[in-house]
Length: 366
Picture 1 (tube, rainbow, N blue to C red):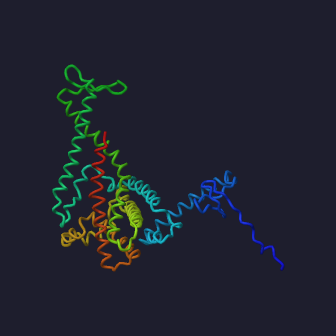
Picture 2: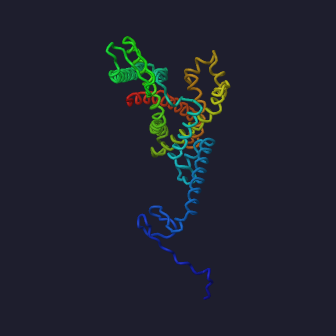
Picture 3: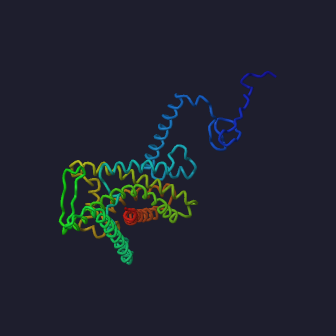
């Protein structure tokens, strides 16, 4: 029998993985994923190629995943749950990238809804919800506890300032303040020193709080994901086999939320910062319908205040479409679950997380 050259099979080359010592054929170790090493990979040309290739593929994955997550709610989550993951950015990597961009945008625009200021703990108590009015003592205890922490921290700072200026007290009880270059000085009478230290304490306490709360706010929002995933797992426990699947859904929703909020901040609030009174113009038609003098009492019971309503306005559609795509629930049940998840998420974000951030920030102040 005659054989053609093309009929002769090339011998299979066997490699030993330099990472796990596993033997395999092909270009990638089927045990640990390490690629076959070639000394040509050490060339400058290859280094530059790999660098550009990484950023181009990584960026395209992120942008593609954000676009699909924004325009087709639940699609990327469904793809992840059925094992199609290579074409999309990993959930946590996506979250971290979007979170960085989100805080850069809102910080530049000047929208601070996600970074609490001291005093925000007085807003959005649990007892504002009609069925939960009985929780008012708990809400009051939380608010009073945070206010007490703030007062104690002020007294501590004031005591430290008093100790620091002790060496500058003159024999007549007055305080002399000398400028750093010793070219100027200020004398504060003895009966004004207490007012001086109190005012200095207020400035220092506020600056320290502002410096810390921004950092914590950008970090601790991540702790909402497990709680929100638990909510999804509770509602769809018959259809979500693993809690990790609910975490993926929660992460994708948070990514959508940050993208939409950043986009809204640029479109609605940036012109306002530049001197044009366009802030919130996108939501005015809705608030005009739902929060006029006739509809406001009913709307406040169903949707909460205007600020909460605006969030429900862009959260509920995403939930409704995502739940339908993932779980194929009947429309009325889907609508109720979307509504409930939106209201719970709003309370977790503005009623719980902000209070925790404020309390934690005060506790860590030195």
